[in-house]
Image (cartoon, rainbow, N blue to C red):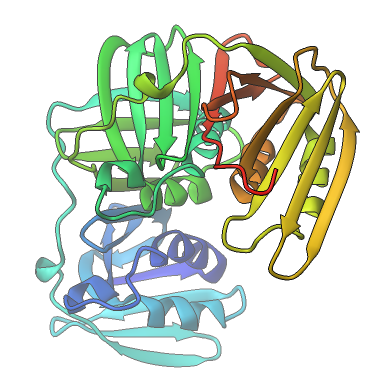
Amino acid sequence: MKFSIRRDEFYEALQKVVSVIPQRSTISMTQNILLSAHGGQLELMTTDLEITMVSHVTAEIATEGDIAIPGRLVHDIVRELPNVMLSFSADASYRAELRSDFGQYKIGGENPSDFPRKPALDSVREITLPNEVLKRLIDKSIFACSHDELRPALTGVLFELGENSLRTVATDGHRLATLFYRSDSLPREDFSAILSTRALNFVMRNLEADGVTVIGFGPSHAVAHMGPTRLFARLIDERYVNYNKVIPPETNFDLTVDTSTLLASVKRVSLFSNPITAQVLLRLMPNRMEIQAEDIDYGGEAREEIECNYEGDEFVIGFNSRYLQDLLRHIDAPQVIFHLIRPDFAVLANPGDQPENEDQLMLLMPIRLENV
C-alpha cells in the first residue's frame, strides 16, 4: 500500500482513535492501528475488544492496501512533525515506512487479517439526536454511575426509549440522575440498553459542536455515527434496576434556593467536614438555611446561612457533601428545587426552569445525622 496525506489531517484522525488502544493487553494486536487505504479514503481502526473506534480521512492513495501497525508509535511520531505532506508505504512483508521532508521512519507492521473485525450489527434500532441534546443526556446522568464491578448494570447509563422519547438514567444506590427528552423525531417504540461510561466518555469527546449523531442499537453492540468517526461499543448485558421504585410519588415540603449560592456555600463548609463521611448538615427554617459541618477529631467546624424559599417546619437533613456538590454542578438553571419528605427519606431535586421538551430529575439519599 502507498498513500500521501497532510500531517495535520492524519494527526487529527489518529487522535480520535488512539485513545481506545489499551495501555496494557495480553492481546498484542490491540496495540495496533489498522490502516486501510481504499477508494481515496484512509480508514483508521483501533479496538480493545469492548470498544472499537473507526475514523476516515481523505488521502492521495497510490496503491490500495491494509496493514496493522503500532498505534502509539505512529501517533507519537506524527505528533512531533510539522504540517507537511507525509508519504506512507508498506510492502508485502508488512514493513512500513513513513517519509517526510525531515526524514524517514521504518515501522514493523503485522498482517491485517489478524486484526479483530468490526462488530456485526443485525436488527439495528436507530435514533438520531442533535449533538447538543446527546451531550446533555449523557452529561446529566453519567456522573451518578457506580464504580462497583460486582453490579455491572449500575456501572453504565441506561438508555430507555419510549413513545417519541428517550430517558437516560444512572444510579449508584446513593443517588440517581435522569434526563427525559421528548421529540417527534424519536421512534414510537419501547426499548432499552445499557452503555458503559467508558464508551459514553469517548462519544462525548468526539461530538462536534453542531450536527447530529445517529446511534444504532443491536443485540450486543451499539454504534454511534459522529461525522467521519464511528464508535462501536459492547452493551452491558444485564437487567437494570427498577429505578422508579425509589422515586417517591409524593413529597411534603419544597425548598427553592439559588444554585450557585448553595454550591459555593457547600464547597466552603465541607472543608471542615469529617473526611470519611464528608457530611454536611442543612437546617431549614422559614426563608433561610444553615449549612453546617464539623470534624470532631480535629476540632474543625463551619457554619453559614443563606436565603431560600421555604415555608415548612424546621427541618434538619444531612448529605454527603461530594454527592450534593455533584448534583448542584449538574443543574444549569439559576435556581434548584428540592422536594422533601423527612430527614431519613430520599430527596428529589430538579432545575427551577427547564426546556419544554426536557425533564431533569435527581435523587439523593441522606446520611445518618451525627452530632445534631
